[in-house]
Image 1 (cartoon, rainbow, N blue to C red):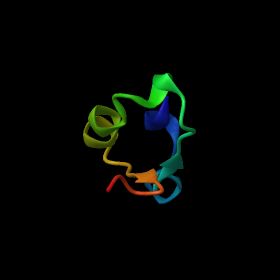
Image 2: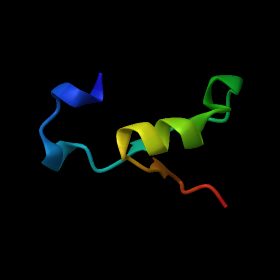
Image 3: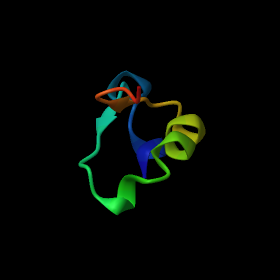
Image 4: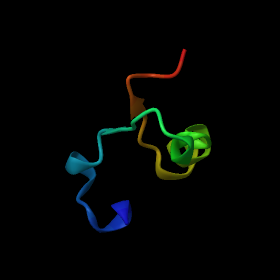
Length: 40
């Protein structure tokens, strides 16, 4: 989904606090796009 975006547009993304975000670190690593706010 993010691969179609130009690199300048792939700077980050946001998550809510739902259970669908439980594996956000895997998504961070696979896309190279950090989630905001950053995981502590």
